Image (cartoon, rainbow, N blue to C red):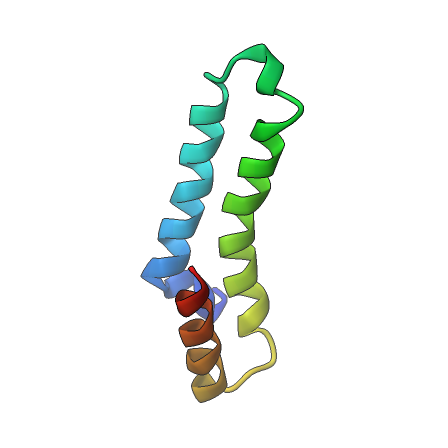
Length: 74
């Protein structure tokens, strides 16, 4: 059984963003391995994780309101 957030295009795009950031950061200079790289990866991962977390235990109208607030912050 799939979670309801997995059907959302915005969540799927967020997962794609995480993959893209991971690929891009592999090309960064070695001096950025411990500074910029992990920060960018965490930021990209947080988008899909926040969508997933916001979907748990909420009705559809509450989840839609949550997604609206999340999109305003992006």
